Every structure is written in C-alpha cells, then in structure tokens.
Length: 352
Ligand SMILES: [Fe+2]
Image: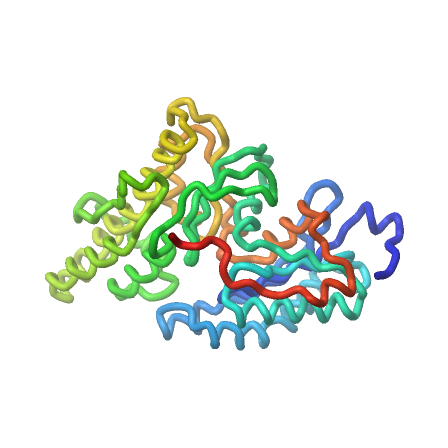
C-alpha cells in the first residue's frame, strides 16, 4: 500500500459504492471531522422493475453493470476531483442480493487495485441508520428503527458498528407489505411512494386492517396477515368499487403498517428497555426507504419525544450513506492488497 501524505491523512476522500439491491449509486465524500458529500449520483431501476412488480435479482445485477461507468464519470466531474484524490473506497458488502453486491465489490476492488487503496466493507443496515449524521447531530445510544423493502428491525445503537437487535419482523418487511399491497391494489411501482400519496386524500379509518400486536412476543412483527386481509377485502369488491375507494383503501392499509411500528416501538421501550414511553427521551432514529413515508414520520413524532428521521435524500439505498458509514469506522478499513479478498454476504439479520 502506498504511504499516505500527511495532508491525505487529515482530509479523507471516500469513494462510496452501493449496489446491494436495485439502486446503483456512487458518491464522493470528503471527511475532515464532519462528512461532506461532494457528489452523489444514483440510477434507479424503478421504471424497469415496474414491469415485474418488484426486484428481479438477475435484472438488477445486469443493470448495475451498465449504470456504474457513467455514474462514476459524472461523480468525479461534479466533485471536481480526480481518481488520484481518493484516499479509500467504501462498498456495501452485506447484506443484499449476491449478484448485485458482487457487481459493486468488483468495481471497488478494481479501483483499489489501480490506485492501491484500502477498502471499507460496509454494513448496509448500519449505514441506513447512521445516515442520520449526514444532516443532524444525534448522540449515542439511540433506538434505531430500520424500515425498508428488505428489512424491518429495531436496534439498540451504541456506536456506528455497535448495534444490538431488539426486534424484527417474522415474515415480510414493512416495505414488502407496501409493495405486495400495491400489487394487489394495482397502483404500480414503487408502491410505497404511490400509496403514501394516494393515502393523503383518504380516510384511514374506513377499512379495518389488522395490526400485528403479537403480545406474547415483544418486538416481533408480522405483516403476512395484513396482506391476506387486503386480498380477502379486495376479492369481495368490484373493480369499480376498488377504484372509487382507492384513496381510503390505501390510507387504511398504510395506517395498519405504520401503527404496527408505533405499537412495537412502545412495546420495546416498555418491555425490553423497561422504561416508560412518557419518560423516554433517548433519541429514536428512523432510517431506510420506508422512513420517507409521511404518515410514519407524523405518527412517530406525535407519540415519542425525540424522533429523528433520515433526510429523504439519504433514505433509500444510496452511496452517500455508504461513504458516510465508512468515514465513521476507519478502523474497519482493509489495507491493499488484502482488501482484494473481500467477499459479499447475503444475510445479516436472521428471521426467527
Ligand atoms: Fe436498503
């Protein structure tokens, strides 16, 4: 590995790479005590995936290959720096779809090999929550709620790489419940965003959808019953009826998803952390794609005192959160050439 100049050690320039699922994203971040995004560009496959109603792993991986070169070029041009300025590479190595992860890892290794740079292997889930530090100062410990298409989990966060799982979904993630519900309702993709918009003009009390209390299993959530309840409800309605009541259906369905998260947050505070909700002043950080949901933000901020939601710019999968997380864990950097042996890992939180 090349010895770094003193000035390089003070001013880190991190090339962030995110390809864990269906978003291709590249970022150049400067870290000089605080993170500053110099450029962030992403390629969203929504239009491609709308045809299939969700992510198709093989298509996602192939799309990353095509999207990476132009994104890389635009990022360097916007940041007005060159490849020689980069001091380290950060890439999501886990969890995610294997084919997609490997595409980004190959880019990271290629760049690291040419420039003889270290690589920080990034935990995608931790990066989602820690993205809060891109725009706000939040102290540790905090209660993290990660809500995305692939994960729904509560964490006790003591540091950027010190997170303990307090609760998870038993089956579908919250984002998956939005996607599957959206498919049944025929609203298109990305369903979460569309349902949120349609729900704004709807009555969230019109239809009664189940909230997964699972009172004997604190912290555990389930969304499979909700999806089935929607299917049963729609089967009894005509196409015209569904269209006439689409806003109310979206509002009521969305309400059940977000109220489940509110109930589980209360339960974790009272039963697992053994504290009263009214006395709970520890920060709560909400990150992940579903953190963009306007109703979730409203409900959580009404119910709890100290709620911080990741900026929508950094909620969905993006390389800004990847480079930011790497900037916070310099001790995890793997030197060149050892970094060329880094591998992908598909799972991180096991569903029990
Ligand atoms: Fe994600």
